[in-house]
Image 1 (cartoon, rainbow, N blue to C red):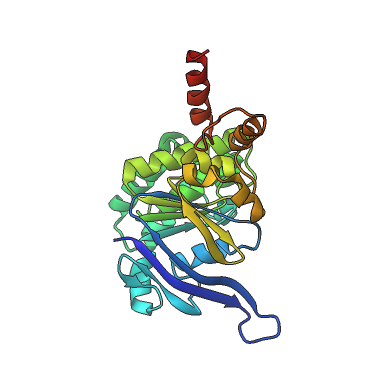
Image 2 (image 1 turned 90 degrees about the horizontal axis):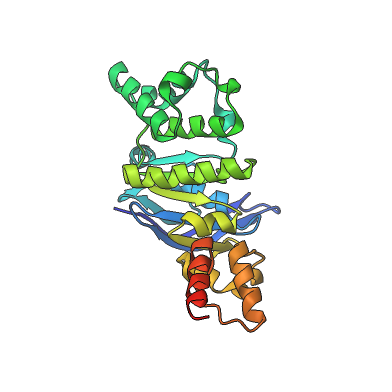
Amino acid sequence: MPIVIKNLTYSYKTGGPLSNSALSDVTLTIREGEFLGIIGHTGSGKSTLVQHLNGLLQPETGSVCVDGLDMADKKQRLLGRKLVGLVFQYPEYQLFEETVAKDVAFGPRNLGLDEGEIALRVCDALLTVGLKPELFAEKIPFELSGGEKRRAAIAGILAMRPKYLVLDEPMAGLDPSGRHEILDMLDGLREKTGCAVVMVSHSMDDMARVAQRIVVLNKGAVAYIGTPRELFGQSEALTRVGLDVPQIAALAQAMRDKGIDVPLDVYDQESMLRFLRGRRKHV
């Protein structure tokens, strides 16, 4: 079953003079196994939305149901949280154990699993994120590089075997090489485990590369839901809500402005290469 969000509204400091509406009547279904991107300008409600997915925040009105479990109900919320793994921005700041293995084992141990199962999950999670257990398990987390710390923190969530992996700006602060490694790892993870990936990002290029569907938030409301092909073919719609488009999509629009008949579904490197090869054949 999917995650179903219906008419979700949430405000900070409700009822006071500083009350601030963060989400307004958000309705959204997150499908099993999909890679869903969430974009929007700063303050659009992205982080507030994802914190509702595992019950960290409760709706002011509306509902959030994970596999049929109402996250507003205390007992159901405890079950629902086991299905949703939430990775905050800069997750490496949450590393606190003496070794990488102990840190990854923290969640499974809290689930009451036996030591054999915990060891199996630690090994599997480290392999999934590209950290060989024989090289990284006994390392002190603070000896790792920035990208390795990010992977270790994600492994700690994966070891709990979530059905939905939710990440808030997982590439923040990484260099281009680190960003690509994390993106490839996340896409490979979804294919390997079948879990859905929900990713918040400011990077349109990252979204164009990996997302199957994209949700655009603007002032706490859903402004658009669609595939990258549908969304990035409407560059003017994005700029109206203060967002950029992927570099390739911007290039494609510039070519159209020069009179070149570039299809609207050219928005990433792969689609641009297909278009250019097609033009070359007709020259």
